[in-house]
Length: 292
Image (cartoon, rainbow, N blue to C red; front, side, top):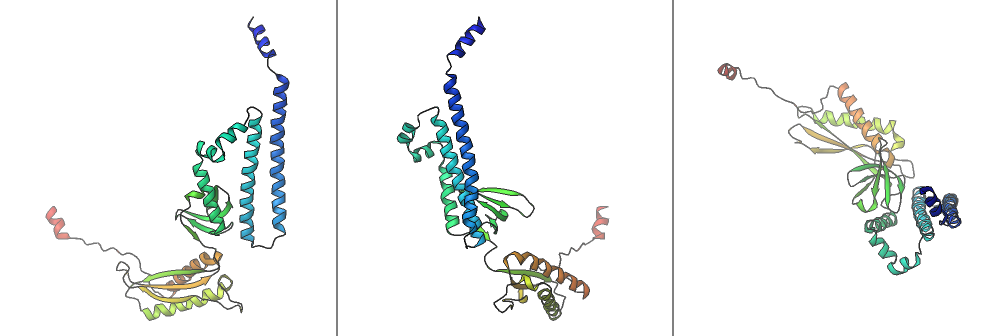
């Protein structure tokens, strides 16, 4: 009896209509997939014939990819919903803004607006090495309407909502200044230290000439040089010398670490100490005898 009622209930289901709607939904999904593939090829071909800056090109490609993906997803979702309900009164009665607020999408709107201004003001582009909010530091891999993705040097990938971006430190803006400071004990001779640091500057300039910023005549704009004694206290450890040099954006870390390494090598070779925290242990025998 139960089976008979089940078959009777199933007989009332409009299978032809259900199959037709399922076929339309599959067609919508397939067409959306094709559109996404075609748009990728089309956008890449359009930008392949442009002459704009490569970083800006990749940023525009990333933004357009994100924008078109959202458009295709929204239209596809609306077409699928249309197979089950009449969405015309919903859209006409509530409106796009009302729908966004109704679904709690205020943050999405804020992400999109912030992302637009980041791109418009060129705060950073795809491929730039940046520090976001002094918390995440790495290379910009993607720029979207809602999210920006940062790849750290360690390989970790961070997804940051555009509305959460408050401060940006960009290391890819034409030139950077390498700054290396070293503290020496007060007992060391400042004249001897300056001579040693000048030799280090010459060696680094010679060994890593292509890492520095050059002018049109292939001369260094600001070669490695001693900026001077920038501190003579530094927690009572000694005097601090600072070396500066203008480098290419991607070379600042190479120049700074080689300056430090050459300074360490030459100090070791010339028996010049580099300052470090020192502890003095006082043993009070009298106090120990009193305690015993």
